[in-house]
Length: 618
Image (cartoon, rainbow, N blue to C red; front, side, top):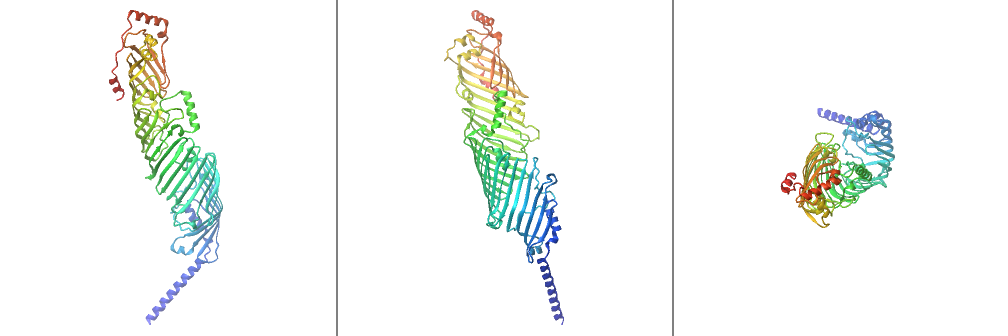
């Protein structure tokens, strides 16, 4: 009897449980989902971190577990600063899901059909983005069990004041034509059309999701073809990119790599994207008549961007890396202040931010639209660490000789201007090579510069620098008339034959700088016939000269003029000024009288060229 009652009790319990489960399933199958509109708004508000509202919410299917819920007039506002523009307004969303998934504690939509969506993406000049989630938002994984996404009658508007780009595109998605976007816009004022396409989500093949995008315009065209590991998985994808633009800055408006204005450019690249890094396995391009190839890895490590790469150029013109407007400004500045030896290259690293890395480079041939260049090759390694940029070793090949050494731009202390340190040596060059070829004066040239100063450009930094500069020319020759003139021997200078030559024993110039003002010493031009000595100053950044020159012959002069001369002007355009009294008739007669009486003053002796050279080149 107890056994019978126990069995009956079990059957009753099972029957009751089954009935309750059946009632629960029946309730789930016919549940009026519109009753949960408030809960859905709260969940979406939590998801986006914004007060999401739903106009109406209703169940579309009559009965069953394959449920479709329709939401109308869905509004997702933007942040307060972007008002009155909403992030999104959607006329209708049909969400299909299996109601039984709720028994597992989660809702997993498998179909979404959207119609009448208006998406507005906005980025301000200071970088604020209206689609960026608030800290309160519920960030979820990108993994999804979505099997179908259809979109119709929808538009996407993008307004980016930071990069000066604006797009207005229609977007749609269905199983037949796939996902597609098409529209027009501007990039830095240049009109473009845009198109992108990818398979519909129901067409995905083993998770791989191919896509293609084009930007077409007269000033800018780009074509990207690639594959994502899964739909919208931009952390895992492979790309092949080609681009053409009037200016590299137009391409930078799309890729946002912090690039600069240039001449017209064409590029192609094979790129891989991993969760924390970009790998540019191949990059080939041409800027103006300069070519470039290489590879680059961009890593994100502890909140910093780490660069590692190598680049090679067979031919490079530095003017290609400036726009026409930039070249016009540089030419106007040159006309206004005259030519300068020290370049005006900008080196301020204030905007570099959290970027470090190492990049090696090699240039096979340097050319110039201005004419023949004494610079021929370039090689080195750039190392950037916390706003400290080092270029070492640095080698610049010349038509004869080379420049070696290092350059450091250090702004790691957060100062508004970096500290620029230069340590450069010129080896085995020649006077004709540095002068662009030809010329009547010959000789080997070596030099050394050790400078440190603050400035946003190299010219500014040298203009405030302290250190030393030394230049030596030796073992050369020059016209005899010039050698005589250096010794103030006017008679021998007039009588020298056109082909007469004198030995150039050495030219030694040393400059000690403090705060951009250089004291000249030694200043010696020593020839087989004469010796010229000087003392004075060189002031940067103007490169202005103020040097007093005195010379003497090494033998009795034919007609020796007493007095001195002044070297003024600039390093690029020096001017030797002889005082009026030196050129006066009285002074000439005085020189003639001294020549007759033999009282011409002391003659010059040979300079210790080796010791002087070692002193300024140390």
